[in-house]
Length: 248
Ligand code: PEP
Image (cartoon, rainbow, N blue to C red; front, top):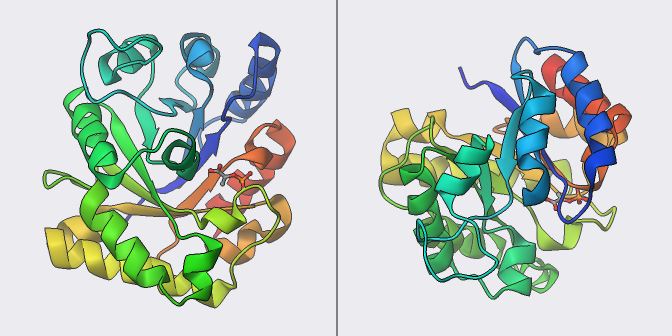
C-alpha cells in the first residue's frame, strides 16, 4: 500500500514570515495515511526544518549534479540534506524552461540526489502544443525514460505529472486525461523496473490543484497525491488539500 503524499512547492516565494504558515500545518500533527512535504526556497530550508519539528518533511526545489565545486549559486544534494531536507524536486518544468534543463540533466541530478540521501520528486509534463498534437503519452514516456536513472525504488523516487499548461493557470486536465497519464506512467515504470518497484513509486498530479478540485482528482486511479504550487503557500488552502487527500 502506497502512502499518500501532499507536496507543496513554494517556488521563489517566502521569507521568514512565511514560516508561520508551515508552523500552522505542523501543528495539525501527522496524518493517518498522508505524508506532507513542503519545499520552500533554499534560504528557508534550515529554518523550515526547525519549524516543522518532524511533523512535516522539508525539501529542496533543485540540486546540482555534483557534490561540490565551482558552481556559483548552486546547491548540492548533500547541502540540502545537511540543511534539513529529506526530498528534492527535480526537473520541474520551470527549471526545464528557465534553465534549459534536459532529461539528461535531470537524470544526473536524480543520481546525485539519491547518492546524497534525498528522495527525488521527478517532474514530467507536456506542453499545450504537445497535448493538442496528441503527443502527450509519447512525451511523458520519453521524459520518464530519460529523466529517471536505473537504480530507483519506491522509497527513493516519486514522480509528479505536471502538464505545463495547467501550472499556475487555473486550467486542469479532465479526470480522464489525468487517469490516462497516471495509468500510463504506472505501466511504464512497471515495465522498466518490475511491478514490485513500479507499483511502489508514488505518482503525484500537479497543476492548479485547489481545495475545490482536490477530492475529485484524488479519486482518479494511480493518483497518490499532489504537487501543489500556489495553493501550498497558505496553510488554510494546503491544509484543506491535505485533508481531502487523507480522506480519499
Ligand atoms: C507547480 O508549480 O508545481 C504547480 C503545480 O503549481 P500550481 O499548483 O500553482 O499550478
